[in-house]
Image (cartoon, rainbow, N blue to C red):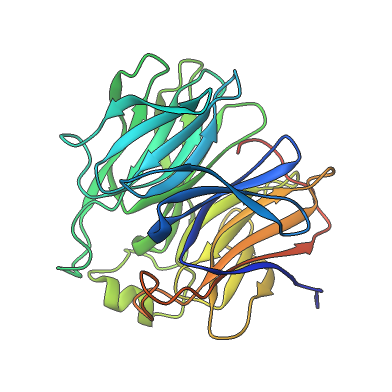
Amino acid sequence: MTRDVTVLAEGHSFLEGPRWHDGRLYASDFFTRRVLVFGEDGSSETVCSVEGMSSGLGFDPDGALLISSMTDKRVLRLRDGELELVADLADRAGGVCNDLLADERGGAYVGNFGWDVSADDRTQTTDLLYVGADGAVTVAASGVVFPNGMTISPDGATLLLAETFAGRISAFDRAADGTLSNRRFWAEFEPGGFETTTAACASGVPLPDGMALDADGAVWIGDAAGSGAVRVGEGGEILDRVEVGEGQTAYAVALGGADRRTLFLCAAVPFVEGDPANVHVARLLSCRVEVPGAGRP
């Protein structure tokens, strides 16, 4: 389907973790070390600065903003304009922290790279961590590859996890206390995964990054080495695509707007291309879709 894709904002370093909340879109801008909030017209303002580079975002039941701080491997909370430490993951995360999914209990699932991707392209496993509302840290799932974007079903019973450089989405049963069990592959784009990130990026299969669940049970994913966002059904069927053009791809997506039918896309050059720390060409895009968002985030 051909869609009208609107450029809402441009000239950013690398946008991640988009979250629709109270009529506006929040997103991290990695290399300028800021959390931004955007109006639907693309206007923006800085919410806070995060020295450790903000990535994943979420909101607790009281509306306080939870932030995954990448390089110092911490989870922060913004309350009344001040950042406070929720949990230090330095001894638990195998690599820098990335996406975060806040749950209904005030806790958050937090992913991490798993290893130093810039120094070694051999894929390695790590743990998906859970940070309770009280700051206690536990392992939610072990043996996952580059745990990244996540969603929770509307009934709270299923969590989907993007394992970017394995080229798959895993599903878990989720208990009332947030613990995960019964891992299975919800969509496997490359059976057996990849030995290296180089092989993953050259494969041509979707490499799922940020995700957004819709009311039909499909997910929109950012494709880290592709050319845009992909809508995927259980089993891995490609149902729809949105191309972002101009040598870029979509790393993260969110379904928002008053009816949750606006797909927001955080676009930048594909993985290992360009220099986002110094050349700021990332864009925030949007388009309309037929099926509204559902569940979390």
